[in-house]
Every structure is written in C-alpha cells, then in structure tokens.
Image 1 (cartoon, rainbow, N blue to C red):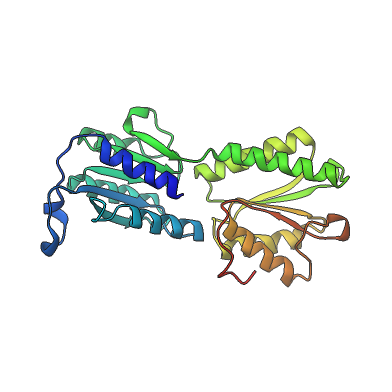
Image 2 (image 1 turned 180 degrees about the vertical axis):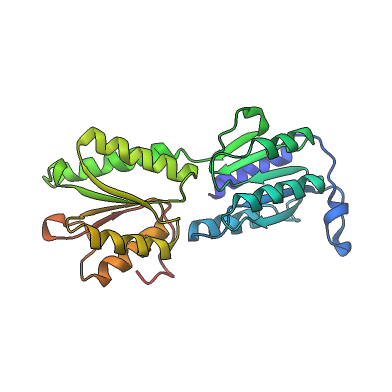
Length: 276
C-alpha cells in the first residue's frame, strides 16, 4: 500500500499545472497557495484494510509534503461520494481522488469534473464508464487475477492432500455487490470452480464487514452440513466467519479430512487486535 500511495503522491505532484486554491479552503491560520489541494472521496470504513488505507492517504498527503487534503467519508453510499465530488469541484481542488463504492454510475459526475479541468485519479476499486478519458489513471489491484490465483492455490492444495474436486464444498461470502473487488474476486472463484469441478454451494454478500460475514456464515451453517471451504472476499468477513464456525462447535483449519473448515481470504490485514 505504501508504494502505491508514494507513486500516487509523485503522480499528483508531477502532473498538471493547475494553480492551487488552498487559500480558499484551508483554515484561516494556515493559508498557503503553493500546496496541491487534493479532494479524497473514500468508500467508508467497512473494514480494517479500508481504515488503514484512509490513514495511509492522510499520512501521504500532508502539508509537510506540499498538500492540503480534503477528506470525505462516503459511508458506503454512492450518493454521498457523488455529492463529495461535486463539492470538490465547487472548491476548485487541484485533483480528485476517488475510491468508488461501485463500478458503475459515475459518468455524469466525472464528466463534470473533466469539464471543470480537474484530473480524477481512481484508487483501489475501478470504475466502468463509457469514456475512459473521464479519469486520469487507476491505482489499484487486479481483483479477478487475485481470485484466479486463489483458485490455483486451492487446486494445488487439494491435489497435495489427495482431495477429489467434488469433495470441495465451497461457500463464498462476497463483498459489496457491484464493487470491483467483489466482481473480480467472485469471477476468479467461479472460473476456478468451473475449471476444476468444485461444488460451489452458495454465494451471499457479507458487505466486507465482520458482523455481516458472521451473519452470512451462520446462515450457511444452518443451510448446509457439508461446508469445508469458506471463500471470503476480505479479511473482516473471514474474522466473522471464524466466529460463527467456532460458535457452532466446529473447527477452523486446513485438515479437511478431520472435519476442519478452511477459510480463504484477501487483503492481509493485521490480526493483532482481533479476537479470532
């Protein structure tokens, strides 16, 4: 994450020649016109990765580094993010950075930003727009490739353990439906299941949160008695799934022959503060 943000900071510092308008929007005691003004619309704080991403942005775009950062929390609602972008346009920021809650629905507001001459950088998740010139660049991951790599790992694991493909009974706790991370990671699993013949039992959104992940896993355990693999589209969903599995008297682990339920997950957040 740090490398991506460093690259993003260099990108914003080095491209474009708009005049900063920090004097109009900074606090009275801290007005300066030579800093780059960045408006950042974050998805929200649905996961530990997202919170860490926010803190990384704030520590990257500092006054000491030559920036004024205007941060807006979208609270997982696209309407809030669209409103934030329009506010950034009114404030005449130098750059807009957007971590979009969903892929679609951005054409109109990004056109407004382009018409105002404000470059837009898309981070983490992608946007699906008719005209790619509506944003300057994308900084983030290939989520479908992540899912495909996870599928290849699961296939290699099952072969090494002598587990037949039809004996893998998988449930998928998806992310927010329509987010590029959800779309890509779901596609990667679905392609793996089709390629190797796994039993993909069900897919339900856990909204990238621990509480919803637990709720979805509880429902899965009541509905299916043969689950042995849980594919979670982020770590917080995995933490919630662990809670539900253990509360049901089952064991989380990789010894499927002994009745363990194995959890696969994405993001790699710290577990130090987690009771899991």
